[in-house]
Length: 634
Ligand SMILES: *[C@@H]1O[C@H](CO)[C@@H](O)[C@H](O)[C@H]1NC(C)=O
Ligand SMILES: *[C@@H]1O[C@H](CO)[C@@H](O)[C@H](O)[C@H]1NC(C)=O
Ligand SMILES: *[C@@H]1O[C@H](CO)[C@@H](O)[C@H](O)[C@H]1NC(C)=O
Ligand SMILES: *[C@@H]1O[C@H](CO)[C@@H](O)[C@H](O)[C@H]1NC(C)=O
Ligand SMILES: *[C@@H]1O[C@H](CO)[C@@H](O)[C@H](O)[C@H]1NC(C)=O
Ligand SMILES: *[C@@H]1O[C@H](CO)[C@@H](O)[C@H](O)[C@H]1NC(C)=O
Ligand SMILES: *[C@@H]1O[C@H](CO)[C@@H](O)[C@H](O)[C@H]1NC(C)=O
Image 1 (cartoon, helix red, strand yellow):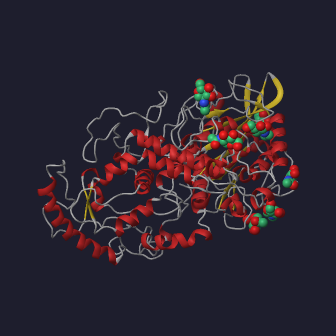
Image 2 (image 1 turned 120 degrees about the vertical axis):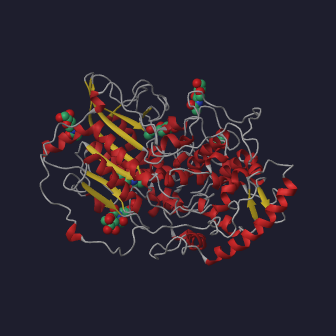
Image 3 (image 1 turned 30 degrees about the vertical axis):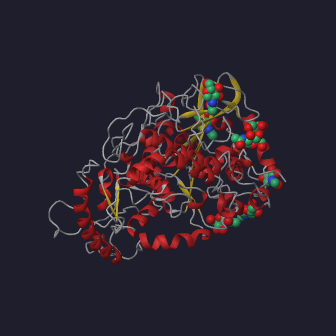
């Protein structure tokens, strides 16, 4: 998860973080090979563990075979005990690439340019959005391997089909189960099902309209887990596993744990995440390349913005390679804003907004998520605990907590987007994956979107920037998260036909809330005891890895007034939740002046000082709620 707390690893949490970081993450600069990287304690654990497991295993084979189908009960390598010890359960495995001082580097022999490029004439810019009868569909993740997910799992030892139990969720027929779309903010972005947000039309402009400009706001691609997380966190799971390695033997579907190591880094983009941004860049060039003509006509180049975090910069540059090709130098200018405490930054508003880090204000999802997870994972907790054989040779004696079971589900998502495949995925049923997806909806609803008292305030800065661009009038007073220094005409142009900004999912959600895209909040506060039917707020749809919001400006033959549409992951979002926008069920268009009027109203009504520094309090849990992402008024 990447809630506002874990986007940053702010000082507040460093105390919490340090022990875990030390155990699991040997310093990156310290060059070790993988076997050396294992802490010495791991070796001790493992020897004890091996001997113990062997004895325990023999006893169990005799004692427990009748009770269970545990043919794979002993997680030891078959036969040979003198063989190199298997990897140590839960220990961290790190391969430091590139080496700090490789011995075969000869820059003189490998010049980066040797001339003779051959012919280089370019052609016309693509304009899929205008020329194709329909737009390409992003189906997800060609490079990742989906495991087989069973509808029902009888026990951790087999997949016997069970009678369908009474279900607390309603399976929507138009959304067949898809594991990769069941990971909330950890899902790779996909084109949402047609009509997902309530507008039938697709992203191509209505006939008679042409796109005149595009404002793109996108998220970084798939990353390793963040340094800190409020609930769960794969690193915590690895630590528990590692620290308890002498106390258990895993069997059945969990047997792989006996030799499993933790292979995830922290924070940075994964190879797949890199591809997502490259692909997004390519797809945007194919759809909107024609907007570059405006730059040629005015003898200018575009300005794109991202911020300083490694994955944010890497995402922006991968987008640029996709969009402009290599080398992109000279084709655009990349503004890199600073994400750090105390720096005004519309892409990291929590860095200057104390209430966005305050207990009880920023972390309102906690009781909801805990309640829901305890409910939807009760069966899985029992099932997976029964696959563990405890120290005394007793099956189920070693118990997983529900939080740890939740961490295993996170591990599935993280390992898949980092390593391409994960054994953790097949431990869970379709229904459990839908429960996981919903746990993330709860998390972000209450922490970053319509249910959070600090959501709108954090979206305010981007809203002001959007209005400045739409009106071509610079921001008069920098009184939110905007940074006046970066609003010079060179760094913040107001007359371009293409803007590309990169940020975090929490900020995308803040912006969605601030914009008042309230049809996404239909149904009100999300309940913690069941998944509502046909909910419109789905994090996997609106804030997955590489999520992208296209603000299309249109010129239509039928009216002299320019129009705006908002398209999230290829789905058109209704704008009529915005007070001044008409109901356009077919295309989701709103006249630009009306759109601006409402956003200016929000800007006037939203006070950064109150929202971020105000001394307001809200009672915990469901005693108090918001569906507009606002704190109580003064
Ligand atoms: C604004 O951005 C500039 C450039 O990144 C930075 O040096 C400055 O400290 C920022 N100002 C504030 C108030 O954050
Ligand atoms: C913040 O500045 C904008 C102009 O940039 C202004 O419209 C708005 O009223 C100001 N907000 C407050 C709370 O003063
Ligand atoms: C940074 O934000 C604060 C709070 O909105 C504002 O008072 C200040 O002028 C901003 N600084 C710059 C350089 O924009
Ligand atoms: C970009 O060019 C198109 C076609 O010439 C024009 O209709 C549109 O207004 C231009 N957009 C901007 C923002 O200049
Ligand atoms: C769910 O569907 C019903 C019937 O179509 C509709 O009235 C309701 O508004 C929908 N709820 C949401 C949250 O979209
Ligand atoms: C925002 O949405 C609420 C309903 O959720 C509505 O009452 C309010 O007028 C809207 N404000 C604007 C500026 O669109
Ligand atoms: C949210 O708060 C409103 C107003 O206090 C209340 O009427 C409503 O029942 C609450 N909804 C939930 C789901 O708690």
